[in-house]
Image (tube, rainbow, N blue to C red):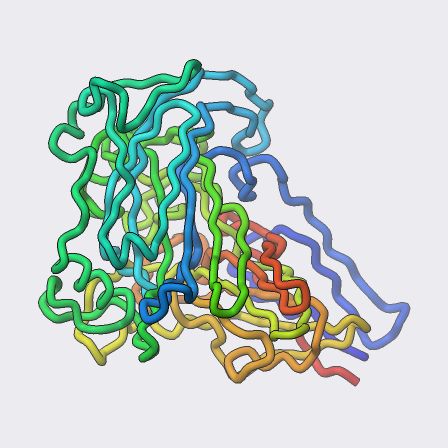
Amino acid sequence: MNFKLQTKTPSGLVFCGVAVLLAGSPTAHAQVVTTAPTNSLQTVADTASATLLIPYFEVNLSSPTGMNTVFTINNAGAVNFVTFNGGTPNSDQNGATAILAHVTIWSDLGVPVSNFNVYLTGFDVETIDMRKLLTTGALPQTASAGQDPTDTISPKGRDSQDINFASCNGKLPPPPFTAAQISSLQASLTGNASAGNAGQCAGLNHSDNVARGYITVDTVNNCTVRNTGDPGYFGSGGTGDATNQSFQLNGEVYYQDQDHAIFRGGNAVHIHASGSDPLVSTSGNYTFYGRLDGFTAVDNRQPLATTFAARYSSGATAGSLIVWRDPKVPQGYFTCGALPTWYQLGQEGITAFDEQEHPQFITAVKPFPAATQIVPIGGSALPVSFPAGWMYLDLNTTVTGAVGPTADLGAAQAWVDVVDGKLGVQHRAQQLDSATQANHSFPHGQAQ
């Protein structure tokens, strides 16, 4: 069995991760090893953060007991145990700080379709049911001290902070969405024409009445009505709506489908921020929201990984991959029937291995073309023939029109979760690099 590690390396780029090159002879080999930091902005850790990513949501609008997505937003109280760029750990406790969080709902093609604010007292938790939101318009009922003087809407715990955000007067607690807003939101998330958006579309139409997309949650300093990426949302040195309050937000996401006895979930993706670390404060570098701010790094958010190792197995059902992608260009509503020019997103390489290490090279398909999707393993989109094994996913890709990151236009952040078909559980794929130093390598060759 011969195969080689194919490497696509931009000029001057140093890639991180572990790569092994196998030659034709069993004794002829070379090994290239670099270390990746495990407690810095170059990897995504499950520690409290400034931004949460729910990489995929799905709501079956035709069945009240069909697939639904529920997620939580937790205020961790500003516990700081993580370092930036490998520095000395800082374990200060700033107390149970009350915060504002701004939730943006995105379509599966990366269009921001709605937003709302959530106030959390210190150590607070809010649970958001996407079915209720999309069918009844119900929004989380929270309010800061100024809108809740009797402390009944957002009760303050014994050790919690409860403060006033004057900008939330008249905005918190929020009214439910109107019938017209619900209709437009459902249309936007099912790939249909949205009456509230000039009859334009925001997502893919699968003709199944299932709402799909992803969600971001950011710490903010006011009850803003802006979508993430609107002018004024980010500002140099944290002067916009968004703040760099890392070590504040925790979150989880759960998928529930009574019709098919599916109950699974896990942690949200925790994205940290820094206004001083050069990795995420230098214009031209890759940041999480870089596509929305011209890759000026004004958002100060760490980017995700670009290459992943995904363990999978099939049982009663085929396994699946939940894959979030970065379109790398801003995307607004578009004329229905004319999909965005960046769609479909490609990749540099996918190699699947079975449990006896036989490789299968997945070519001539683009399994993950949208900003977010769930894709069955073994179907036409991802034709893996093995019942169990692991996959190497190099999801880097070049997007026409993207202005960054300037040092590596081929770098493309992503996120991968695995739905195991045998055990029915969901788990994360392993990060093999960071978009700050994208690894453009993947096993490629001919099996013998």
